[in-house]
Length: 245
Length: 237
Image (cartoon, helix red, strand yellow):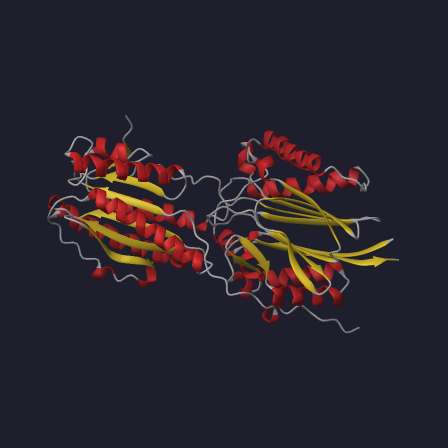
């Protein structure tokens, strides 16, 4: 059996608390015998049902894997279409326009050595290989702070990023609410801010209770220090592969 | 068992800076604005700054610049967050002609400079706003003027249209009283708005709300602005 430890949390940003909006970020993760999966979405602040879009997209990805009994081979494009269709169905029942559910989506599936990834929109994924950190998937950004692509965008397939990676034993996924404080942008390339990720990887090495770790990540994201980063909702997740037993 | 807790105060972070939302007000300061219009405009402007200061996020994110135009264009306020603006320094002394073409090109250059500053310093930014207000007709450009005015007209309108279509900035034009709305309609991609009589205060109220809500947006495909009924009407053909 493969050993994984997963932890993460989404918290509401100050701007959504003051305007009474629900948290529009959502994260979920699960561990199976052969793999682990983490999915996160950031519902668009400007979209009326962005939070619901993030929840439905994330849950449908988890459901996709569960119903297929965590297959070794996943058609990632099919998985994204499934998530998109789930949001579209939900929109019909819920009674708003599809684009009111605008959300980003990041999915990580780790089979141990082999990692599959989906990303659409901003936020990003950093991986640890040896003692170094690399940007595995960088934010899909346009020139402006408030503009990105979404799962609900008509041109989503043009921007959809899917990939297979190897040999990252630890992965960190996050939404744009904290991205500026943990990545360094040089021109259009984002580099991990090493000090942050080495602190987080020690934290992950030294703990194994997903619940406690998630609680502490939540506390961290809710702290004044992290609130000062941005007034946006914030999500941070860790996926740690600890070998086979 | 000893367990190392995650202490948020000990987690190293980069020094993040708030993303900026640059707004440049391009205001007619020609002779015809003398008297009530310029007094009301200044009053509205003061209230506008006051309202933005009351909004915690807008205070950190919005950067205002003011350009006045009469015989030429002049930036009386470089891009500044609202806390740093001393409104008493925003003096208007209406006189002279209406160098609107020059003012628009000047504003576009200031916007591009500002964007470069942001990029150099790793600061993210929102799509800039150009907010043009006039009560007349340009004296330095016209589709039916002399050769020089025609050329200027072409350069200005092309630059605005290209900028708006390519998402370089948002451009809004507001006509006060006898403003030449046909001209504004040709310059602006969005229909210009004719301000109802002396509704400066209502207009600035709308503007501060719209800017504040833009600066709050984290990810938006499209900016949705409230209707302008409280202060003016969009003029479509």
